[in-house]
Image (cartoon, rainbow over all chains, first blue to last red; front, side, top):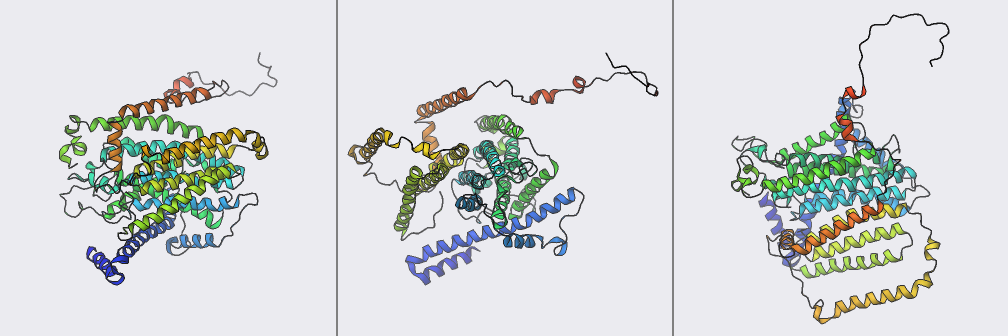
Length: 369
Length: 222
């Protein structure tokens, strides 16, 4: 692989010359990297909603989609064609420009954030130093799509949904940010590749940060469910009370862009949990075991898939929260808990405590930090 | 650092192009903020100008400041701004009323502010005009780490003072808006969780009753 990249790099320089070879090479390389991240992401979103419908069907003792193609495998294609061919309706009272910009504003940050996500030590578009900050900044921009959609639709239901969504996302972002602060304190870096490297060790899964940061791991995941407006925090959409909230006036491709953004954001929450708390591509088994102890991208995908199925499991199990209860959970439980645990993490990293028997696995000097 | 494509030979020109694109976007969107008729559009253009400013900071290798600008101002402050602005029912004619009456005062303030900013820019003692770009940091130097080190050592007192002022502002804002509304029913979750079945339900033992046909006319209970 490295040899091939080197040959291609040399090829660019010999054909285009020393002036234009390197920039053309950088541009091509970045574009190929972007395609390598975005295309699997889109395919994943396409097929994950089929998996979701199968799993929910199984949990509710019925068959999921099984008509289109073998085992219903062509169902996502059929859905995509339906959405592409659907008529695009802009309500007459809507603010047309903003109505059409909103889906793009929703999907663009959801895609852009994948630039800093590492899948293997080398498979990352931009190995940014402040990777975690990029993730936080980009996810905080995702809410604009929903707010603008709700306002530009010029519909009461859409507007109520947008207001609910804005308040909810801003509240849970704080808890989520604090949970990530605990993670980056433990890792002592914001570079996501190094965060995973810091969780490497001979003991397998016991070295991962979800053990010392267990409350933060749980809070990050639940806040992630709330951030993406998924069940049981989906009061923004609330189809039984405000029809579909901000999305009520959207149809066809514009609607499916919101859908795409929601699933990309779900996968992002699962990925950040995997990287920060579950050791990314590291193996859960001790290093000493020959084949199972090897790190690899399959571990990463396995953990991401497990967390994604948790999303579905939660959706199939819990009734919707009442709005004041959502706010109470975010402000009065999660935020105080995260602050307390940040102090605890700080204590665990202090000089005499970090060398105590169990704590030195993660914070001690000999843990390779 | 956000890895820009490594354009070594034409690095300066490429950065210059990026700079002019973002700087002009910043100026134009800032102008639209004050000229737009619709306050929601104005707020959205303010978001755009924040994003352009963040991009300019990235060009100066200040990635922590740039990302924090987006995280705090774009991600939280402007969302709440939009939240409020969208709910306002603004009468534009009423807003424009008295434009000429207030113009002299507003113009004086504007000219004073402009003069101050120009002074700041062109005053030699400020050394803003001649300040050179700090250039790319050495590899391995983390912008965030350096900022944190400086904030928590050299400028600790100032930093803490700023924090206290912010805390006072929060307390003041809450004190201004907190009214004890008596008619609101709130749920005490702790009480609900602690409740035992014996608090709500009384089980008494009584002899079994025999089913009897109802009396034809039962007198109303006293």
